[in-house]
Length: 382
Image (cartoon, rainbow, N blue to C red; front, side, top):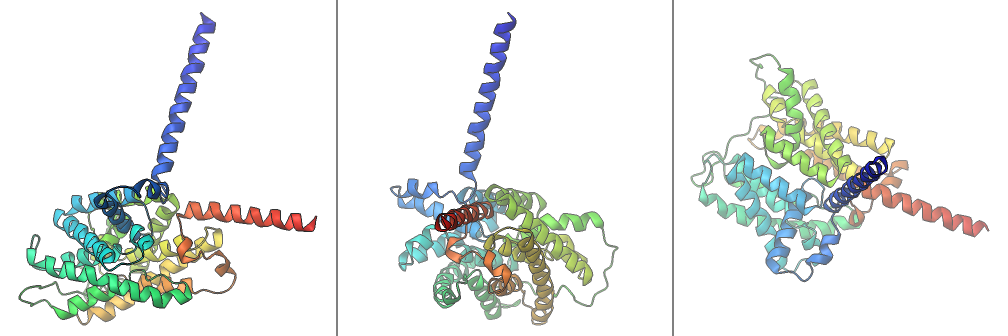
């Protein structure tokens, strides 16, 4: 009886271990860049391929490349606002289809490189519009702006490629500023809200609420997608975690740094509570975390990038706010571009733009590369 019980317990233990391995393998297949999906999608219908390209494009905003993460982010946007979710979907589809029609590089299209700028343009048009939700005339500039991003991305990529720099979200920042300059708060068809600088000389009417400031840290990650609700922002964080836990740490750390920077500059409380003080810091930190091999020094470098991005954002917001314009993500984009041009010892950790993967995968590939070099040196010595 005792032997039979022991055998049953061992069998149950093996079953649990086997189940755990299957679950872990399934999670690993769903995380990272999901490169295995590309082979599976080659003979699938155009509509399905377009959907996967679009979802990859959604995650490119946060330097990721995972269609499942893209699905979670879209779900978060629809949760926060169905209108914003629709605009984001139409924006990424419009820019991706434009890239297909104009014959852009198929690898770039499949990787979602031509989708994320269009998505950001459409989201910000919706956020800044003072005409309210479900204003269908807004779809006209959404489609045109998203499509134009493809041409800017292609031109800027050719120009910046000589320095191995990504076009990043330069197209988005350019298009949204041009759109807001062309319209205005009193425009008869496309009115938008007037932008107030975060450092406007207005006394903060209430005392700072610590819990609201802490709440603003995850909201800083959500504000990358113009999402100011806590639940959807946490879902966006979950999408980042599915792609890369290391990138999630950088996102939260960068947002916290941005919030701390806002506190040091005494920005309006609303900027701290809503996460607007944190999102440029999050982007700056994630850029270094994504384009550099993870190490203690590059981690400190990422924190420095977050501080630089956050301070630059406050300065640019105060400057551009004087003419009623937002700074968008100009600060993080410019700072990240400068960081990628870095020389010296940290430059050895820089990953070529075309070889960037999930941070954990980058770390693994570097270990394999160093091991291969060690074996070559040992064989040469012999």
